[in-house]
Image (cartoon, rainbow, N blue to C red):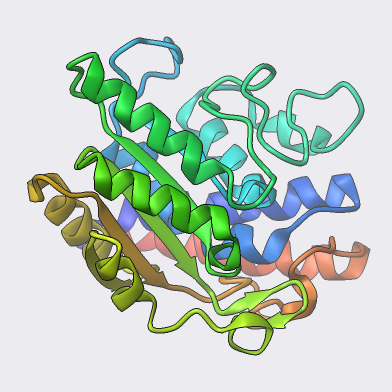
Length: 280
């Protein structure tokens, strides 16, 4: 039996949660939420020291979603982990609801940093990592960026800061699904060779398939064993992963399903969950 079978089920459920949330909101960002669902799942169910019964514990690992608009699948993972009820997903983006269109650390259990202005989340993550160093704490800090987000200058200022301060407790993860709101990343403002850029800024780098839990595990293990410099994971992903008509389609960057599309997406994901559960 596949040792990652349960993770695959959880990730499929996280994708389903993102579709449910954005459908009921009638807005949101499903494409990038689906591409990042596997890394969110692995971080919260395998990697990070967190406790939904004590979300503010001092020694917890920290997570910052720098590409904050892709929070629907993060919210789904938090619900699956037990931070709040699954039904909260249906109130996504509603006035006064717990789950807003971008992460809100003051209103949502499990959110360590409010984010959404692209380029800024990684700076907050750097500050958290430096704070751990100064306080001689062992917790680690993880942040997920979009590849389009890497066009922001503040990202590179943060990388310089991380390298200068030898933040080996920081893991920067780039979700390279290749698409942003206006088209392909290459067409809008090409960022390649991204690995060489990170290396020139003083990072150790791993390039992986962001939908392979084995490769995610290997990269995060390498990050833990890297001393004296921060670590970057560049993960190739599929925007809209798991929903056939969304995959690699830039139009699904920032719109919700209509009624017919919702039924198709839910059926595809529920069928995938059922298939995986049979294998377990």
